[in-house]
Image (cartoon, rainbow, N blue to C red; front, side, top):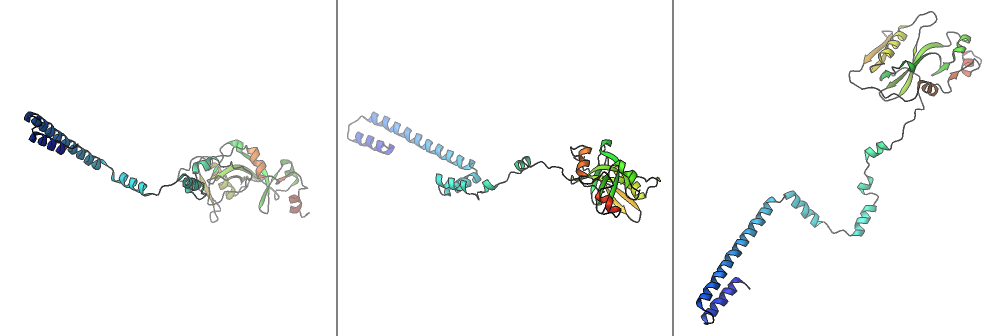
Length: 264
């Protein structure tokens, strides 16, 4: 029952002489107190509503409104979206997982050559990763000779060189042959400068470029810090096997020797 209705009832009852005047006064006093309480409660509620409105984040409210506007999705709708092969979440590629599961690269080819003129290279500093050998060049291939065979060949058919294990910044491992002086002790500037370049490359990244006017190789040291190279885990023995597979000459009956002598 409302306060105004209670007041009217009290006034009507007093006019009919059904209750004493002092009782009516008490009733009016109670009703007046009730009105003050109602006004206070209304004022507090209004203040709290205003405070909540002021503290609300406009962006959060906007996001909430967008969510409310979205159509309701049933369990069937959600499953259909999840099973869709074109769902971006199903196609998203995790690069870290891809790298972790990548296959290990096998070292099955080791070129035998001098460094490319565009490459910065390093030479393995361990003496166990270099050796003096007899080599023979035929067309674009380099062949390894067993020492016993050299006595059956002339100096024009082979040469002596130091084989260095080298690597470029693209992590390509190769064997770098640097020619040594012949039997007469003479050595060209090309060979001297190549040997110096290989020595410098043991502890720094260098680029080796042929200078035809100079008649020698020029060596350029990298200014940037490329860090230490990632050397292969294979032994020097294993690297020689990979590099000279099918290119080891052990006797004069080898096809390449026969071709050099015009016998094949």
